[in-house]
Image (cartoon, rainbow, N blue to C red; front, side, top):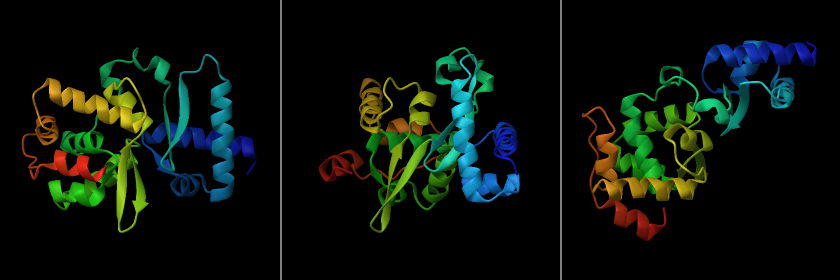
Amino acid sequence: MEPDNLSTIIEAILFGSGRSMSVAEIAFAAHSDEIQTEQALVNLRTTLDRRKKGALQISEISGRWIMEVKPSLSDNMPGGVRPDIPKRLMPTAALIAYHQPMAQSTLVGMLGQRAYDHVRELSSLGLISRRRDGSTRRLMTTRRFAEYFGAPEIKPEKVRTWFRKQADEAGMTGAELAASLGDGQTKIQDYQEEKSQDSSGA
């Protein structure tokens, strides 16, 4: 398949999917191999970046690719256009933001086994990154996360500071803030997680 044709097909795939996709998923959908697909993705990103008046861009976040509205235009979009995070995932997202870089094992201790599914879903949405650290993973927020929640900075440590400030101003602990964002059914194990996280640096 010609590189230009493959880039066009991939553009249609990403536009139509409305979610982040791995190179393997895109290659399968495009009936191409992963090497050609990855090169076509790079070419497509360059092409979109050159469209000065274009509204869309593609981004790679944690090894997954997504087509989205350029951040400079996001404030002009109607609220209903932006995909919503399922409410059941909000407490998990908040806990990660509050404690990052957070050990996945710590999150499981706070939320139970459902934390694994939540982490996978948040990662597939491009909102968090997962980095292997020994027998667990370290969880951190991404640029997409910061833009979604309106954080003034995109670096994980800045997002953590911002989230903690929101909790302090609301007179809440991290667990209480996380629970307040959920569907009212999320139970979070409280074991002085703020102190344990701060002392461990996790």
